[in-house]
Image: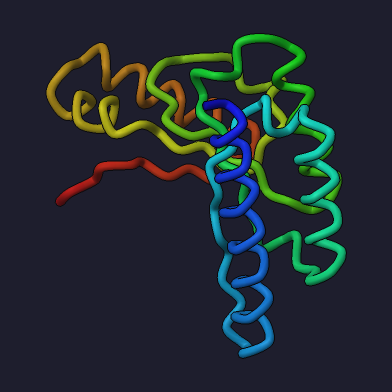
Length: 151
């Protein structure tokens, strides 16, 4: 199952990079976000294919690697993000639902999870967490998206 997930992620990544090249050629450069895991970023085959594809079509700035916050539980997982940013790929931490130190996370974008966004309008503790995450992201100069804003 893990091999199939890796192959599927590689296929999605390749298609996303190729599509950004088409849009850039058509003078409509749009960024594409692809869900990835820290395991993908540590996988030498995955990194090699990523480098080859990016070298072939360029535009690493149009790729956003979305990493679920819940998977970033060790320093090794955090360090797997740095090579992406060094290549010009933006890194988004996805589904942030609780306070966590952001100073050591090599990322460009923080996505506050739908569950925290929904609870923040109803529960004072959730609102305090939401505000703390927002302040920490601002202090780190991260772009922030709140997922699930409906009105």
